[in-house]
Every structure is written in C-alpha cells, then in structure tokens.
Image 1 (cartoon, one colour):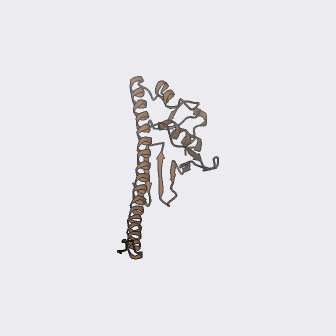
Image 2 (tube, rainbow, N blue to C red; image 1 turned 90 degrees about the vertical axis):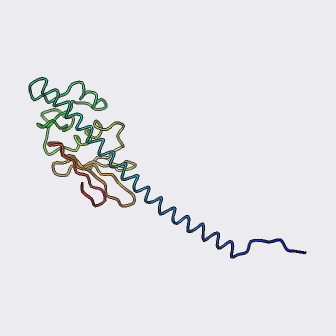
Image 3 (cartoon, helix red, strand yellow; image 1 turned 180 degrees about the vertical axis):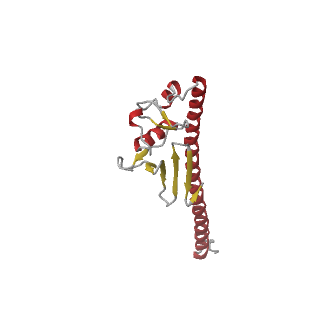
Length: 183
C-alpha cells in the first residue's frame, strides 16, 4: 500500500519563510505610504489655509479699491468666514487677516486667540486644534502657538516627523517645515 503524500516540515518552513518575507516587504511599503499620506495631508492643509488668507486679502483689496479708502472690515465675506465665531475679522495694513478681535485689543505680535480664530475661520471643516497653554492635546492632531511674529500650526506625528507651518499675519508670508526641510 502506498502512503499518501503529506506535507513535510521542510515545505511548511519554506511557506512560512515566504509569507514572512512578503509580510516584511509589505509592512515596510505600508509605512512609506502612510508617511507620504501624512505629508500630503499636511501640505494640503497648509495650502488651504494660505488660500483662505489670500481669498480674504483679495476681498479686502476689492472693498478698499471700491470705497477708495483703507477699509478694515469686510461685512458680508467676513461674516461668512467667521460664522462660528464672534467678532469681526481684522486685517493688517497690507490686507492680510489678523484675527477676530475688537480693534482696541489688536496686538502685534499676534495673540494666541487670533491664531486659533484664523484656523477656525480660514479652513472649511478644520481639524481639531489645541491651544498652547489652554487645551490638553488629547486627540487633536494640530497644535497652535505663537512664535515671534508668527502663528505656528504644528501637526503631531507619532512616528517622529516634524510638520509645521508659520503664518505671518502682518505680511501674509508662510513658511512650511516638513521633517527637516524648510520651504
């Protein structure tokens, strides 16, 4: 009688080794794709933030040129941009949005509340953000702080990446920093 052919230990080890190699390569590739997705998400958020600021500046310039004066408030557009916040948008002398405070409380360098309000008003459906010294980070991916004359928006990355962008509200400049590369 002929014995039925069964799988030997060697064949099982070869299959296990092949699965291990495939899993290792797949996991490494997944890590690279996850990092690239996180980088792209940050880049898009920074881009949308700057686009929102540029759109407000364009509206400010249109109102200023139509009125012939240096208008600091944009009633209709500012009201729409700040619909979830109380106050009117305040603009710099060059027309860049500074925040949502009463004119008597306007400070330069920016105050942390203005940086938070800019985040909430310039982005559609903004990611949750914590405020330096006021909010525990918790599940918030982004954190806002004031660095010199800039509002800094930092994305926390569990894998050690360093992502942030600085918005200078007085002149509208933005500097992005992505894991050691300043743009």
